[in-house]
Length: 170
Image 1 (tube, rainbow, N blue to C red):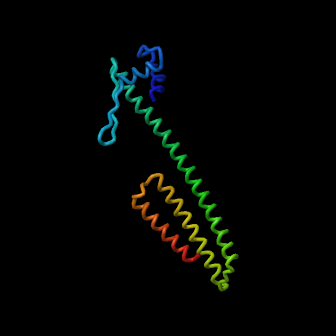
Image 2: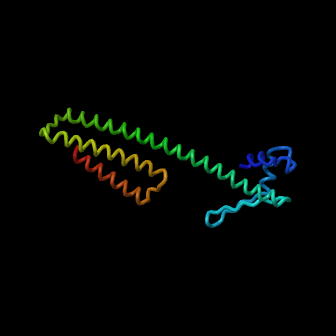
Image 3: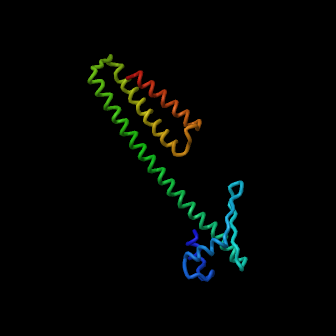
């Protein structure tokens, strides 16, 4: 932010500095930032020219808004990539679970009455898919919620219940 303001207002000449470091120090010495109790940040700039000081203080706000927008976009992009990876992992787990189910059925020679087999397989598959989705949901919640968060705890309990159901069906 400081470098942008230095370039935008030609502060190196304004503060009669030969280097960027000196200009940054001069800008820092004339600028103050106070965080209020309500999350409001007060920016003030001291200068011989009051109009220039006000313009520079307003420019700080503009530059900070630009940085904030940039961070919000990159945060959203990171979340999207995270969710895509979680979805891919869940699909992989679901495919592996379906394969394991088929292998177990072949190995144990489970024979179910003709009408029940598709229903049981479907139920187990749906249950595994739901478990995978809940696991993704929990992983996602870890990025913004603590382990004591009521929604996180509820989702964790639901996942435990689903796992118990799956154990009974297996």
